[in-house]
Length: 629
Ligand SMILES: *[C@@H]1O[C@H](CO)[C@@H](O)[C@H](O)[C@H]1NC(C)=O
Ligand SMILES: *[C@@H]1O[C@H](CO)[C@@H](O)[C@H](O)[C@H]1NC(C)=O
Ligand SMILES: *[C@@H]1O[C@H](CO)[C@@H](O)[C@H](O)[C@H]1NC(C)=O
Image (cartoon, rainbow, N blue to C red; front, side, top):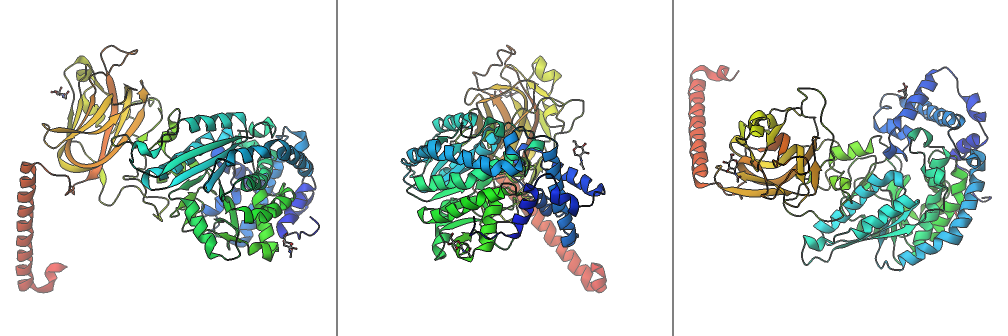
């Protein structure tokens, strides 16, 4: 520590470490305005997924500083310090020993235990890993994030030749069990990609018991903010855990946050980028809008990077009271020591996007509140996360692309279908527009002209049209193995069909099928549903398979039953929505008569158009340009 030169950030942490508001009170006016600002900053980090984020950055990315200038930005920084100070004073910390001034000492104790009892587990696990690996750290509060990360990592093996290995260090028992559960449920990509060399493996390291359970109990965000004990203590662990992994591994390791969504194998890119920088031993993310400041959400290194990791670990305790903990530590090292700076490179933001701005290889959802919602909007949240157990396997043809959880029956009458963004065809890697990629050009929601079901009492009293009325509160019932059939009026290109079930006891594979037809006579299966159950709720299932069709039918398999709820094999639908375009697919053959009809229609249109053009020319010749005004 003696040889270490303090950077400006150290000043802040020293002030904060000095105890309740010693420095802050003198520097800040207490005019109530900043208090309110502090409140709103506390509120900004209000969802469990947002825990590792920084209010200042959140505001920054929301454009709050666009017209404010540096002075206002500074105000926000100070206000967020006030917010943290208030949290600290409101006795929200249950661990007395974790008072700011004692944290470094406490951490030292943890480190001893780690080195003695937990580090050997890294060596044991990495012994079986012969390729570069992703390395994650989990605790139970981020279960869904972890699942989503893994589903996307596994997905890489379904679309390319990648062999993906993830090693996860679980900080508590629950997340270790989750990891083991996922590990045992992995299905290799060979289930849909025969002869593939790609594969997926997950290894779990049990670190439960190392840190006190209290650190993982603050699921209420108010108690888990920058500067809080729980937050900063966990940040402090990162350099040590990273070093333990790199020491244990024979191959390079990428420590990666679970809010980084992989679109391509980032390990390959990391290796290639590192090769281009002759003195570099490690690569990290590129902090948003900064002059190549590193972001610790991704860190790729190998044995040669160990001295750098040790420097980072050494500086780490000094930043236990800084807003960004370990990240402040590395940033400070980098700005104060040129020889260390020369050893570290960063990803290009175009390749690894930060703050939810999509990169070609991966997108890091830092900076933003409402991460999960944001991921959903841009198609980076996979609904396989909701399955129990979540599924680490490639989707089979005909399987739904989305199965949402049951959102429950909407209350009231005339409730419109909820608005939602849709990504038809999935996101294309490298798509720069991270926010609003919704439907491909020309695609829209298609309108059904009519719908029919069956003649039973259920079908008659809750007729088929109630599933095409745009209302979530009205339900079409179908019983006794009848079917629901919607008519688009003419053949369209259908790219996506969403069915929102009220009730469907569809656990057996293929118990409900989606069928399409040109003519209402010849049908083909375009989707099949299984492992799904909802009763008097609301559950959306989306299928995507581009084809030409006029009729869309939802039909139960012959074995379908609604037992134990009913004996009449009833299922019911709140809404069926189709998306597509009138541009028919050339490769999907049209029935002969339909093709002929289209051809003659096209001829007519052409004829009419050329006639109009002739008329216009004639009119133009007589009255000059005025005709065009
Ligand atoms: C922050 O949240 C609390 C509790 O939900 C609320 O009472 C308060 O008005 C919020 N403050 C701001 C500035 O939004
Ligand atoms: C930079 O870090 C290296 C490695 O720890 C150290 O030997 C060197 O003295 C540091 N240089 C400065 C200027 O602090
Ligand atoms: C679908 O329902 C219609 C109307 O009840 C019926 O005529 C038709 O046979 C049903 N098709 C199948 C395959 O069940």
